Length: 266
Length: 373
Image (tube, rainbow over all chains, first blue to last red; front, side, top):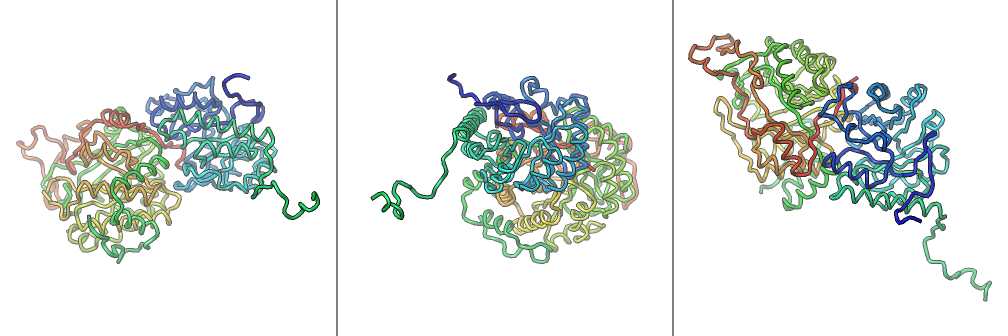
């Protein structure tokens, strides 16, 4: 056993294997330097980048050079379609991303409401159907809706990414009951995305049996993003190990005595 | 500090929502400014991260058919005027793109003959290749006219009401189409209908009791967030600056109240963008960087041709609606007259340094043309 915490097993999205179960978003960081340190400390292998923040014209715009700063040999860049309001816009962005040389992996985010950034289920399903046919690996951001998760699975999505709470809210897994059903029913990886504000929230998701989590705001806006990234890494590790070790069932009260049936032992 | 201004929404088509009540409570209640600022910083970080979006204004024309007591472009002011030709707009735009901006705001006075909708659409078309994001700040238009500008590639609309106080509005806007309060008030909704994705609201602080104006603005923001739920709403509270005409603000708002207002808006409307222009001095802008502001301009010129000197040869005055050539003595070093005096004169690079110094990442591009349907 090495001193450093290691993920216990590999997991897969499509045919690709990963060890880290922590995906990191790149928005909101105080600087590119702080972001790079956080990525390093998190142990992540998958990094999401908003396409609206990068240059899609192929001209390597120095004012939008986030991609230049991410080592694509080390991290899989997962382009996200944040800002897209409908399937048509998301599909257009995805195609542009590939034309600009990015992998054919898309985190599909369609949120017509720019305030809570809640995903549009109808447009998300529509865009998934189109992009899967075009050979994309699609990871859709969705409301914690078990039926939608199954519909996306049938449409060929590589994962589902249900939200724990609205993006940036740091409120943790408020959709727990529905995410439990999604995990129970899903045949593709379930990645809890959005709303995870503390390492304990990430641990909770993994303990529930989620395959991975995606974290951005909580790390990016921390006083020390790299240290917070490390903490999330540990939270993810702890949660996964707990899940694999087989958590005992929870109960509301201590169970040392059996007030109703104790007479049997007397 | 001052008390709540009572029912500032009277006569306006906005409901007093929970968010408006919250704003009033934060703005006029007993919460200490430092405590409010701490909340504002937290909300800003959560919703916008440790970043600042940067933009630049590009003035197309300072010709105007309105007489407004406070504005440098007012029709009767004897200022040097010009409307840039579309190719000159492109020269200015290229300059700003070269400086680093990727987010452009096209600004113009109101002049249906010199600045018709077809001209606005043409200037937008010339800028969209250089800027992933183009917005306009012009007189209110009809839905079909807005559609023409959206089709040309603009995604943002900025339309400040100036004043929500009908009496003050009538007094300030002496003549011209701008006198129509309700036509202006309905502009943002028409813009939403036409397809604008970002809509900027605002009040010009100094025309009427600012306490009432702020509450009315909160009402407008709250209203627009419900009506135009698919667009990003931004707000601004520009304070009157010295300009041609020499108008003196009717009601001064202290720096302390200004900061409190920014913080109160941030906490009451956590997801609204807040714009802070170069009207405010550097020290105040620096202090507000973390407290709620999400968009800043830098190195701004507020006259047409201000960045590169284009259009100079056609400078003229307007007297009773007719163009009059400048006197020989007026040509020396002449530029078009600015709308107002800029206070923070730092360049984009200098502002970026200041942002980084405060642990904020300057963001130039956060929009892509591919998003505009």
